[in-house]
Image: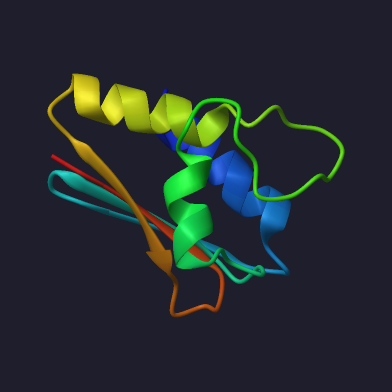
Length: 93
């Protein structure tokens, strides 16, 4: 939940109307239909305190916390483009 929470909160915040969560053995995929992120922004937003926008609320910590926890548990967080049109956050171990 420490990793899934920030990722789902982020997806809900930026989604247009839809968030999809898929769980499999040793993997969790969270997608939204929001504006998504470009490749350079995906690399930047996992750094503590970095944000891709200036919307009020949020502090640029959620994705970096999820990334740090994934790494601490021998996992990996990958950000990519979702089939829904927005961001896809994939946690795997």
